Image 1 (cartoon, rainbow, N blue to C red):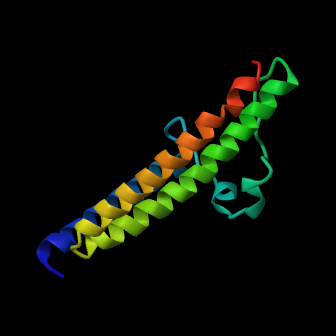
Image 2: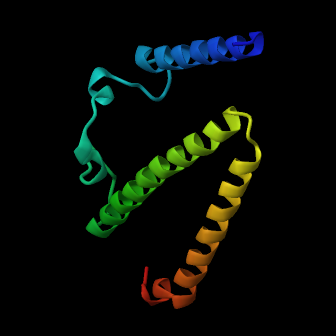
Length: 125
């Protein structure tokens, strides 16, 4: 490895360890405990420990559905970042650009079809 690669690896490692220690110490608003670090496969399908202040039962259902959708989206987003950065880290800058462009076109096409059908127009809030 060259000097710049060593410096990047060391500084990122130190930054990650500092961030983890900050979360574990409980200094900030967000705290991480041992029970949070265990993997629970049911988290994506069933919320545990989720408390939403609610005025009616409908709001709770929407909040839980929103959190599930966002959490699944984060997993796909993380996967996409890892895949494109693996090409970029290998020195290939053209492939990540094409991957991002093609995924953007695919999502734009799907979004167009979904919004054109107008399923959201029939719901009342």
